[in-house]
Amino acid sequence: MTGLADEPFIAAVKPLVDAIGGEMLPPDEAGQDDVVLSWEGADVVAVRLPQLADSLDHILAALERRQGRPLAQLDRKAKQEVVRMLEARGAFSVRHGVETVASALGVSRFTVYNYLNREKGT
Image (cartoon, rainbow, N blue to C red; front, top):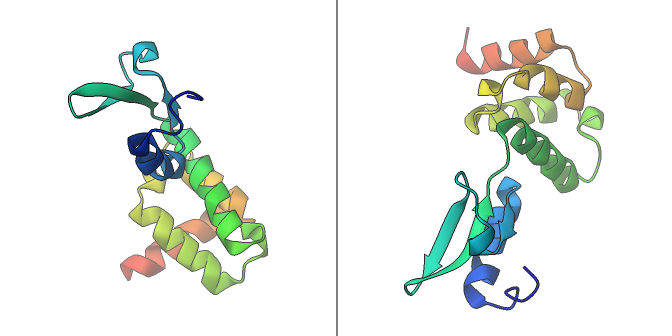
């Protein structure tokens, strides 16, 4: 995407593509599962969406960057907030999502389930 990096449309959508862990590529290299974005009647860029499991890893890495430290070093209240946010984003519908999150938080699966159940009031 080096030649198109200066395109205003690409510059506008890049933060969104980065946030979801996607990859931008020329439209003529798009596969059948890629999303081709058009602007003013012309195909400008294709976006390759990540696999769901890769998205979860990407979200966890972004949360660590935002916190400025590994998620496992957060206090219990902050970890509960992370679990709430991840649930809202569908992280636990991904296969092995609970295990992945538990590992990142440095807690057991049981603890993650407790955080989820506490949030639901059960």
